[in-house]
Length: 197
Length: 197
Image (cartoon, rainbow over all chains, first blue to last red):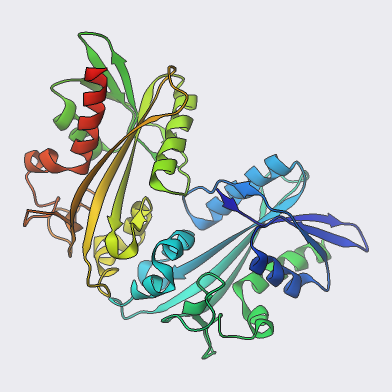
């Protein structure tokens, strides 16, 4: 069980309200920074079990559980950090590795491999009464895994250096990160879908 | 979803029957080798979702789901391979790492660490109508993580070398492995409990 994010969307023609149910203040802050202009965003903490499996399936099952529990349209968020040398692992399990071994331990897992590339992935899964299965929006940002640099208060941000930058996510100004992040890309797809449809 | 093992126990005074529901023939073979003298063992394949979380909690939730699905007493099995340098990871997620990166990739994850020690863990969780929560039996075997040696047909056996031996699980004669394995230790606790109680 862990705190997760829901987005409850009331997509009325001129007012868009999203309720994010999360215990993670940093994630909430990022959503507000990215979507704040277009949506009014509230938050609420919720506990949900997470399954093992391929990232899209984990995310789908969580969205279905969330919808069952919330009884209304909601969006769940799933984040992965994927190492190419490990064909995508630790992926959706990165939080457990971070808890157990810290950012140093995570980055040292690649010492034996030449390939230090990887990608950050965000999956937003929307489930509502009009759907049979959740809609999923995937954002990926490519980069390299490095030894931790920058503040330690936001997960694995200190070890992920996006392509084209010399700073890690943790070292970057938040405005810069929020223009290139995996979360931005997933949220952008989500916004595009709902503003267009 | 993946195939898991159930043990359905009919522990009548003089006849002990266990139904293992598994799609994994190697696991079934090991159970028969270890318990075959004391129990009659059948098998049956079953699919169950697995949660993320601490190993004992993952195992407990799976046993409860299994019991709900089977409608009768059952035992589920959960196996982990835990690296001490990573404070127990990849642990219950080892199967995903094995699928993604193979035994070579798994062993190379420790190249950056001096500590190559780890342990194999088996959790048997028994749930029956007389219980509110599953009974859990944990078996651990300490060892070191090495580059793959021996046959590749049984998961991470080629990279686990138990303490006091120069062979990996995969290289060992099955009779030798089954006298020291994490699975043997968990099964032994299970047998002791049910033969004594």
